[in-house]
Every structure is written in C-alpha cells, then in structure tokens.
Image (cartoon, rainbow, N blue to C red; front, side, top):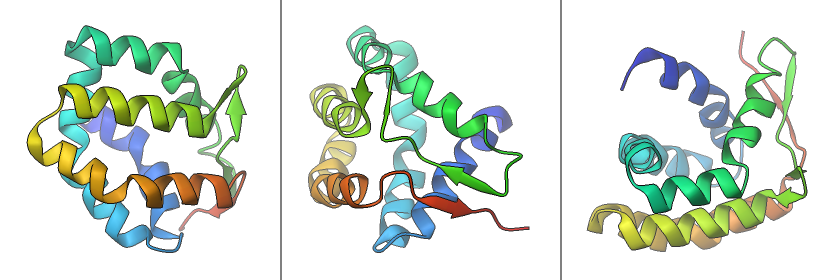
Length: 128
C-alpha cells in the first residue's frame, strides 16, 4: 500500500488499539485493508456504497483532527450514522470481497457494531 493511505489510516488504527477488543480488530483491519481499498477504488458497487454512505467524509473528519491532541470519531456526518456506514459497507464487502475478507467481516461485525455504538465521539489521545 502506498504511504499516503497508510498515513490516513493511522488515526483509525490508533483508535482501535485503545478500545476493548481493539487489538484483535486492528489485526483484522491491517490484514484486509488493502483489499478493502482496492474494492472501494475498483468495484463500482462497493465504491457507490462508500460514497453514498459518506465514507470519505468520515475519514476526512478524523484526518482533519490529526494535529489535535485528541481525535473524535463522529457519530454521524451529513445525516449518515457511523453505524449505517459500517452496516452498508459490511454488506457490500461481503458481496464482492474474497472469502477471507467475508470471513473476517462475519467474525468481527458484531464486535465492530457494538464498539461503534458504545464508543461514539470517544476522545482518542494520540501517542507522542
């Protein structure tokens, strides 16, 4: 993966590592992120879901805060909840992803949805 997407994803990985069960989720995230990015960029149906449910806006909201002492993961942007984005992307990725990605989503989806619900707008202190 190019350095630019890796830099953009660091706040999400840091956020995951600070949450309960986060290390396991961060491992699955790292294992499959290249395929997910490829599907977003090359599979029209996955890309449409990503755009329609404001994936880029969620990412930009977190990136915008990189210089802050804390990062707040938004509950919703432009009328779309984080939970809705996650639900729709899980569905699209399971329809178009590899068997390994589908398995990882099946194994982790409930945990991800629970964390998204319980840790809304959680301040994530960045490491120095």
